[in-house]
Every structure is written in C-alpha cells, then in structure tokens.
Length: 300
Image (cartoon, rainbow, N blue to C red; front, side, top):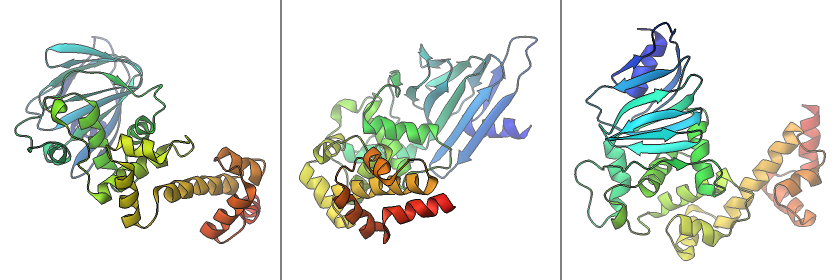
C-alpha cells in the first residue's frame, strides 16, 4: 500500500476504488487524524467510484471544494457541486462518484463528540444513532459569518484551527444545520459561558468587517444579548472589545506586510473611520504608533 492509499484509508475507512478500464488512477491526499475528528482532502486523477466498506462507525461530513460529486446517501443519490456540504450517519454514505479533477474534503466525526455536542440542545440525551436526512447545503454565496467560519474550517489547511474549540464549533454547525430526527426538539441555548464565547469568537474571527451588531451574534448562537455580554465579561472583556481587537490585529498585519498604501487606508479597510480614536486604540493594544509598525514593515 502506498502512502497515498494509506492516507486515503485513514480518511475514508475501508473502501474500494473503481475506474473505467484503461484509465490510470492516482490519488492525492492530505490527512490529519485527531482523537475526535479525522480530516482529509482528496483528489483523483480520473473519474472514480469510491465504495465505502462496512462497518463505518463514524459520522461523515462531505464537502466539495472543486468539481462535482454524486454520492449515495441511504437510498438516495445526491449531486454535490462546488461549495456543497452534506452530513451522513454511520452506514448512510455508501458510494462517492467523483469527476476527474474534483477536490473534496471528508471529515469523520467520532460518535461520542457528536452526541456530546447535541445532548445540551435536547431535553433528554440522544440515544442510538443520529440519522441525518439527505439535505445538500451550499456554503457558497452565503454572506453570514457562521457560513464563513465553516468555510474557513473546511477549506483551510487541515491543521489550521481558529480556536481550540473549533472542532466543537464545526459539530455545533452540523447538528444545527443538517436535518436529523432530533432537529425538531433542539432548544435555544445549551452553552456554558466558555463554549458560548468560543463559538462567537470564531464567528467574529471569520468576518470581522461585516458591521454586524452584538445582538446578531447572540441570535446566531441562540443566546440573548445579556447572556452573550455576561459570558464575555467572564472571559475578561466585552464582545465589542474582542471584535475591535480582531480588527486591530488585521490592521497590524496589513502594515507589517505593506499591503496598503498608507496607515489611513489600512485603518479604513478594517472599519476604523475616526483616526484619533483608532490611534488611541492601536497604541493601547500594541504599545506603538501605527506609523511605527508601517515603517518596520517597509524595512523588513
């Protein structure tokens, strides 16, 4: 077994790959295995049919980064184009047909992680397998910060994590946005303070310039504004202060890389309109003036 075949087995579990006679098959794989998730990106050099072999104990999240796939989800066949995502329970996903040049990501979720994230949202802990219904969602063209955060998690390097809670954020998105037999019983809230803060921080990190209100982030998290504010206060700051810090960090990166013609341009791109207030916040955060950062960026 080659290294690529070994990595594909880590991502897909036991499987067979079939191609048309005369075609030469090669697979390119990147794989990352953790205690609760297995993440892999795969590309085949020709049209291929992947037959997953049982038993498959994990949940699957299938995301198309480029190209087109057709997968068998239970008794149905689903077509997935670029940006499409679908979740499947153990044994639901049996066949994946990928066109030549397609690039797709597979995330295997351990059952204990999925149940742990779902349990606080239900009146009673879920029993047995959580059966996902075959719904294809698109992560393209959705300007919401939640979709943007998920896209960053799914399309970035496998080892890249926005926060240490990113795995939980991903699974939280799955149980809220992919229909299953418990969807109708989900209740609002279900977070402890640390989880709520981690979830909203990922949303803010993914799209810090959207101009969304704190009430909007609270609504996405299924919390009240007071609950969100209180959770952030326990973490040491207010939610708008954290978001401001993310935007200031973006300005600093622009200045160090020389990506904007001036400090003013960098500040305005990141949403700062009041130059005096921006300078005050910048100095308080980095202990230097923004023009000093820009000068170091030009020298380096």
